[in-house]
Image (tube, rainbow, N blue to C red; front, side):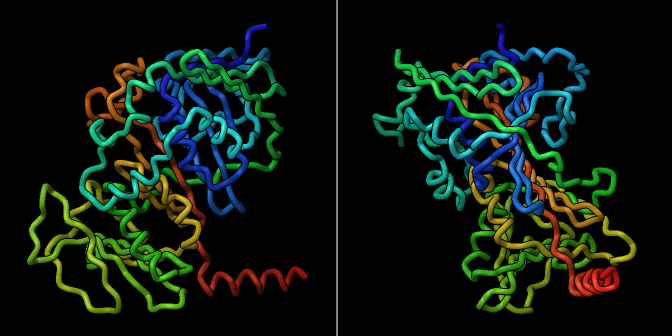
Length: 383
């Protein structure tokens, strides 16, 4: 009997890196499609993360739709944000067990490397001269990972092979919850879209984390300073703010200027209407809120995306009218010419020989005091 799904990867490190970005939850929902594998996690219906393993990341990828399933070949966007409902097989697995399985042959966790280089202007992969004998590229040439899913209800089989040694693990699959749904992002009602290097966002969140805040405040305006600011509040220390802008005395280097950290209300004057560190800065607040977008989120939830911030090259920060926040990370891997990667996984502007994948986080905003009081009054009236 031919399996519904079978795929082979010659670069386990890439799969591990993408899945580790969303590894804050022990369980994940997996959906297999003709164009790749959609792996999503959520916590408390207030934060959701999605990693899409594009079929171009695999040296071979075979998908046979189950009998009775209509494959509409609608494809999957590079963002990997929307699924096709119940059209394709989906199930729940232990994400922590999957990550441990992929580490059997000693994949180095890239987080330590990413942390050390996140404060620099370069987000390149470590050079071979910095690798020791046990991480030399030559040791990775004869390593492969085979994924198989036989039929609905079958376990997900992972076979790792390295220099003739094979290890097979079968992960039990579970039925997903009936009420499971994505956090909706209204694509036709986007009021904020900011694209910047992920390193700047990671630095800002790390800076704010030092004050142990409970709330992250996002403020953005295309007309008045500060044009884009992140603030941490609610902790034992005073509110701290990171503003993304340009100082009059500071000239940009290579088109980038690091964010400035401020505590209190004093601000130096700016001369630009958009932060220098941003590649795209579109802010169009609803008329009901004036010319500035302000929204609050739980800081602890935002920090769940810290690993993705550290390893990604760029981040797209989007918000809709309802306040839902999307952080979409573009992760560019190094030269994979020897691993048979398809050019279909290469994003516009990416380096020749590199492959690009996307990891998306979505966050539900905090309600303000007025909304909380109204909700409580409604509940009392219903009682």
